[in-house]
Amino acid sequence: MERRFYDELAQASLQGDILSDELCLHLLTSPKIELLPLLDAAYQVRKKHTGNEVQLHIINNAQNGYCPEDCYYCAQAKSSNADIEAYALKSDAEMLAEAEAAYESGAYRYCMVFAGRGPSKKRVQHLAKLIGEIKSRYPIQVCLSAGLIDDADADMLKAAGLDRLNHNLNTSETHYPKICTTHTYQDRLNTLDAAQTAGIELCAGIIVGMGEAAKDVVEVAKTLRKLEVQSIPVNFLLPIPGNALSQPPDLSPEYCLRVLCLYRFLNPKAEIRIAAGREVHLRNMQVMALYPANSLFVEGYLNAKGASRKQTLQMIKDAGFTIKADRALEELLKQEEATQNLLTIDDRETRLKDIKDLRPQI
Ligand code: SF4
Image 1 (cartoon, helix red, strand yellow):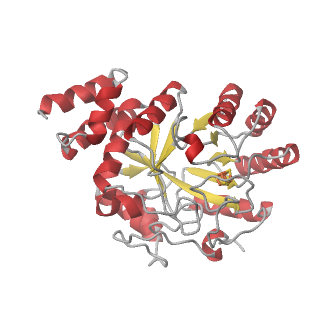
Image 2 (tube, rainbow, N blue to C red):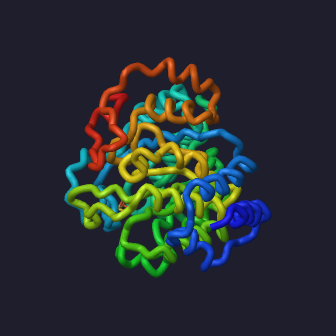
């Protein structure tokens, strides 16, 4: 494609145009698309709306396993035999200590994730108290992922100071029954609606590599745009042995980068996060993902290890990006010593976290 094609793409996104389905599919699948000009076009949009900053997220797996739902991609699902370290809810003291550690390590946002279909009313009250406590102690953004919630739950969490609620769409409406049977796509939309109505920011994204077609990837991006989602995690399936979806997906680094560019064009102002699977599926090309995306996880994912914090910070610095944090990137890098459990960039296997990764404060 000629240079003009990519310039017009960036311009269309910057003007707020919604790209046609045909063009979106072309960007994802056509051999005529060249990666570097595509990344550059996405970067023009990223730079205009989010500058050169990268937001660092740390995920806290507040309760691991014992979920009655059957999401086929999830190691905590009742349908999974994955060899994870299951545990019931962490204590408040443990979660507060982890919030402090996240803040001290430069994280902009602290994400607490609770397995399960959705919280009971008692659990929502407990979460509200905990969120209030974290917000009163540390100047950190708090995000919660707790399954399905209703309007009353959302109001209570908002009043407690919750900044953002995560509830991923994961895939398109038509593909959804192929990845989960215990709740519906509409259930998920209802939860997002409850949070949005209460005034909580939305975090909702996709998992690429679950047998969906390119049109499903496009559909999710457009649904997220319609919902005006502020934060979009783009995950690439981590095939965990024991899960219903345990086969490695056929994802090339180039395809993953095309997906991230598409998500930027369709959601120009959103925080686009390179989420789970960046180490395994992007491999040597991870750094290129910083051009369309402006956010990533450090210290791994729910049950899978990721690159070390030092490795990730170094990558950001080497590429000339900065971080959104109270402390300078250089200062945080100096603080990092030789890391353990380093996942090398050409590692193709999903490695599960052990109990020390999951519960560093006990
Ligand atoms: S994704 Fe959430 S609801 Fe689904 S099985 Fe995993 S913990 Fe349960």
